[in-house]
Length: 257
Ligand SMILES: [Zn+2]
Ligand SMILES: [Zn+2]
Image (tube, rainbow, N blue to C red; front, side, top):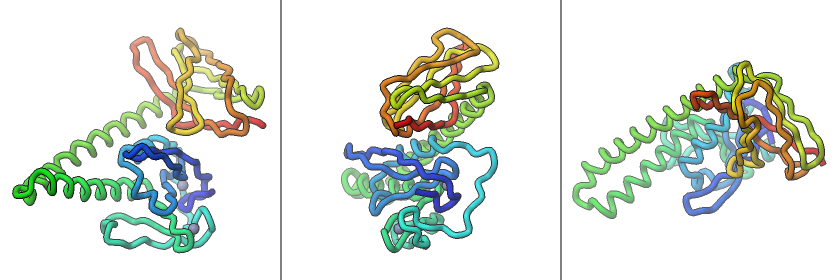
């Protein structure tokens, strides 16, 4: 499946709902857009939007937007989605053939924020503050949103800074297939670091593996017990003597048959 916005390959990412359910969305790691099968956009919780945003690789260059936006499933041209539930400042696209929805990162963020706001205002108003709700609920909701938006933007910014730091310290990253279930990862660092790889077949199944347990400029690990013909996501993590840690952008390899 290819991204309707920038044409890069979409990646399947598992997300979990607040009720404990799970489903997969197709996410573009380059422009940050996400494709939802019918109704899935209503099921994804706000914290998973942040997970998706963290998976977006910061491109060196700004991504060039395609002239035509086509459905990643059936190539039908996408059209603007209008509905009462969608605020004016949010632009969602949909495929009238398969009813899937495409959301750019910023629009998804705004849309879910609006959805949370509407739902929490209703919950709080109807259950606890029947008389005061008119004055009280908007204030509470506003303060709550202000606090959550601020912390998520700060943590996103920190994560981006960390990744830029990590990328600038690492060179010669190599992944070599040894067999269907074994891959070696090696890289060098400018100065000695303790290192590990955070790896898994989806964002919800990531595990950390120690590579260098004492500071070293050369790092290598052979990972075994992997599933053949599977795309793995990984990040490299560096830790210095002052206990500062840096994590790279998301990287991929696919195991051989
Ligand atoms: Zn894209
Ligand atoms: Zn479609």
